[in-house]
Length: 222
Image (cartoon, rainbow, N blue to C red; front, side, top):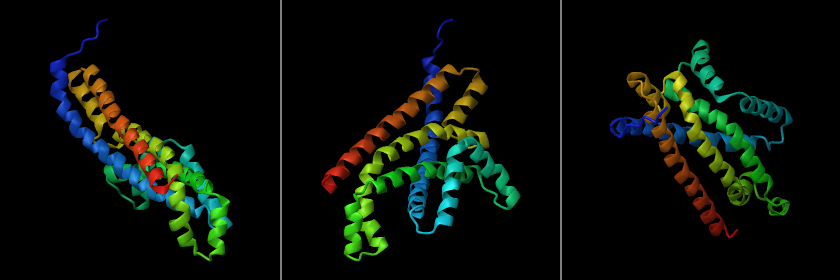
């Protein structure tokens, strides 16, 4: 069986796939921004002095980490209207990605904050610094370099999970490739180009994360 590749067809469908890649970038970017914010909020909440809310939040995050993203996408989009929360496919997909990855980033933040030397916390208490100043001026600036490798890994992971949004009709890269294959009965070119585009998105992203980590460490003198 020969590998029947057609360059003319590949160049014909490439603009259509690139337009869909913009949607994929938007989905990954917005979902990741939401995950970063929620992950930090959850990580700080897990350090609160109230044990009951802390235990409830920990169980909720464990549930999110233990269930597939596609199930959460279906749940938010299809079950949401039954409780009065009707969302568009785009909004439902962004919320699902943000919530799912926030559960993982919570652990990244938690580990990074725990890596701050105990002496730093004791010095803040000795100086009678408020909790807010302790985190914003001392703990978080030192924790961020420790968190960046894990944050970068999950950013690349979000790129690879965006095709799951096609199950609720979001027009992203994989859905367009499937549509092209169904229309033309040619799958080699669209699927190969999808792999190349995902690679072209993921590799520079990983490189930028590593560059940002090195620059941040130099800036902080680490």
